[in-house]
Length: 477
Image (cartoon, rainbow, N blue to C red):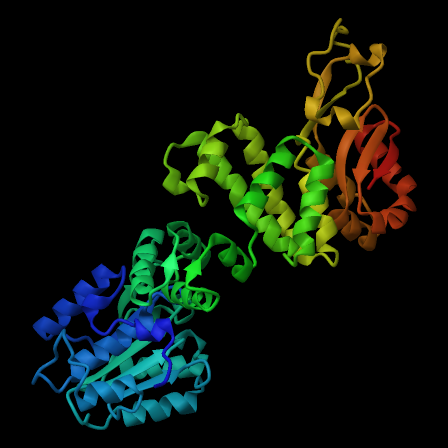
């Protein structure tokens, strides 16, 4: 007997079987019961949420031979239901619009739709209909304006905005939503029980979180995991999906909060050496930071994408909210650089080290003739950046201080460069991490240090033009 994958084996067969799409199921059920069948339907939503399955169920309901009229409970046994299930029906034609998108093919479809159906309705299911060409959409529009009798068009798409308002306005639109984690977990637990798969509840949650609301993706992943063994563990999910294990994320997170450079680099490289992509490491760490922020501000463990034990650990930490928010912002910015860089591992490490220091470092401003010198500084550098700075001389430390945003200043320095190649290199591979007196400390990957070092005098001149005083350049790897 031919093996059926889980997503086909457990595909819904009636509207009542639809998982998590109750408003759509109820509306279509009432339409069939009252005989108010629309000539065109638009099923839109993310992949794996049941659009095509619902289209086939509707086609069966309209043409099932067990009743004289459309029924909400197609038998699944009659010749019509069997032909629709095997894609051999003369009345229900499913077309992949991505590969049949020309105006000639749509005109052929329109011409065939004029023929009288063998049963009750002729149903055309256009999957990925947003891929139709402009002229094909216009040809289809004419038919939707004056639809043939007993013909139903079902358009399925993940990008409805590409169809245009003229098509959308002539269809009854149903928006399929992503499934909640709880719905997916309940559905997967039922499948696991029927397939004799022993599975930890945390594994089910990991699968649901990884699939981001896609029920079909979750079913496929569960089947893939079941091929490893009949007893599934969280470690198997991490390995198969290529994501960072929760315990490793916690250790890396703690090293960042403790500003332990050695541990951050060590743990990052350990993850890289086992085959994890730098971009995935950054994305998982970003999600972990968001979870840590939620743990600091909320009591609902369901909000966090971690185990109960890790949630309790995060709740017990005393990390200021503004620090976590700043780190989240820097990680988001780092994702783009990691994605575009030819040396993503180095950019990842630089990004993680950059989470140590705050954005604002206070430096002395020249005395103002209208102000008297104060006997003590009102603002001092943040303790977390003391490792980058040397103590200010007493004569300087007594001057009034004004905050300088390092990110903003660095953008001005980059914009001041006349050489486009140097400007692009500084933007992607370098970062201003400290500014004290007449020394600007710039963090660079080792591979680019010689090139940037050649432009030290140019950078120094740029700082002088913006700040009004001479600045020496110090490059750190």
